[in-house]
Image (tube, rainbow, N blue to C red; front, side):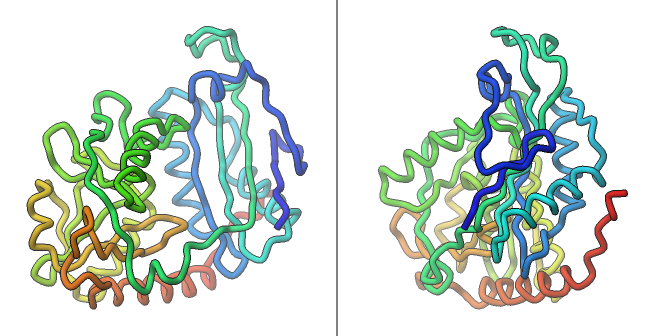
Length: 294
């Protein structure tokens, strides 16, 4: 269960960043999370592409190539020696003045944190989880765009605190138009009349890597899908619900605000997508062709 930290190419068990790093001072950073499946990091190209897109949204240049970052990620995973790993890839603005102006930072820093992946309890997949609709509004796209995966997660933290107070395991947020968006670290789906529905990117959500894969799997397997804008009242007639994320994969939601969704157990569409996703992961790692890093 060792932790390994790669700070600008130096791999150690303990690392320190400058207190003048703007990622620490102002949350001026971007990040991605990758997990391994049977020892292989999944969907690296997609995650690194999103990392660069997030950085571009902050006008934060990433001077390292994907090949270099993949080599450093694999090296850090190998040194950690875990059976399965959680990998957090961070790029900060770097060290600068105690001033919010990012131009005082001369060079960004990268940090690759590798730890043993902590899986969610099997009972949550067998019986589902309880989520709460919270009063915390999701960041507006024209404020701190939720489509940019930054190191500033206070919006999500406040939502999670409210969910905790309600005795729920996660929070479901609305946008400022009153439409469904997403949970604190997951995309949200629900099933109505056999169709899989999920808030569109226009609602102000993160373009989840797992979300995209699940939408593709549904379409490939004859499950009708629809992205759109919905008020929370539509969930009163939902037959099923689930959330998706890199670590969670496909996790059923059995209760909303303490009330059962459908019959209060993971439904057939959710269970089918859970199986399809696991099969897809097995197939994906067999076909993984990573750049050599040369």
